[in-house]
Length: 286
Length: 256
Image (tube, rainbow over all chains, first blue to last red):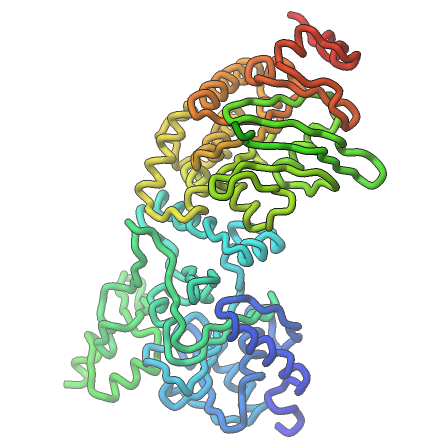
């Protein structure tokens, strides 16, 4: 562990990243460019999130990593190990106990508190990217608040599918000003973006950091006659019976059987420990 | 009556070469101005300067805005100019591909300007898109088709619909009939003439096709090497050309 500087990055780099984070917090939703470093993992594995976490971590922090809601998948395990090795911080799988949470594609079900920070891994920070390929033009559109194009995308959704079919990375307007890509979280999580904790977004390959300060207004874009809807599978969790959590669908055999489980593994475990049961755990409990 | 657009001594240079120089004219509401000249005479440079796509080196382009009356659009702030560009102004490109979003359906293309000015009711946007498709003679059932599935003439008409949906007062057209075959051109001209008269639009049309200006334009400017060599009523200029270059231009039209 002592072979590394605390949390892998050198102090100058962390300082540079912290400045970008502060600027991001001062201008909610604005994408701050930063000199992203090469990290010992490939792009797309969370190099942006890792750098933001490294710059934010202190030795007293308790660190949690989730990947699609789960604590035990490859991405989560390897990033957790990375910081165990390079920072020696305490790690946990419990949302409650964590002070810094790095996440890929989910927001935990448990309500986050003011003393917590959540760091998102972002693949493509520019919400207008697939509508307007020129970076110079999208920057101008952000600076002049020209967001009509974002609605064109939603219009296309409705005209083709009869409803807004964008189900993840659903664009939001932050604090009445910047349109932001909330990273590929399911739109079920969009209402949670208005939270008590600090939210930081890091995109390593694209070299952008942005942020949403606590208690900031975050509105999902929609049409008056097609309002935003946070959707999930219409089913309770088969393990813990939760009806309010985002579910993963798991195919269990080749005869069409399937089960729905909470994507947030920690939430599911806590509920089962508290005695809740679902369709597939009833018999075991009884 | 206040002119809708007053152009005063516009000059644009590319290094030492002249793009266009010393161009002045007034355009009144409901008037259609044609600009003709050979390739490289500075027509498109002039049009782009007027529409705010290029920054002129000298001169003023004063537009009579709805809110504040006559304002110089050259010194205006960029957000204001871009706002004009999607409300009171329209720009029809020679190639429909430059003016359309090819990966977005016809309805989305028409709706973009509406959504850009804050419209967010899907049903209303769609109704207006279908209404406008009808006005440019495209079947309403094609509202969800992409422009890539349209013919060249239809793409051009779609581009016109997309531009006129917000009810602009001034339309810039850069060779609107270029690259279309003659029968399609005739239909497009007919349509344009109808729309211009019906909506009381003012328009500036750049073209090298004298037939287009004869049909559409009230007044005509002839450009050569960056300068305006002759200006006047369309019929007057075409029937009794004074400048040697205009005489050449008129006499080189092929008679069938």
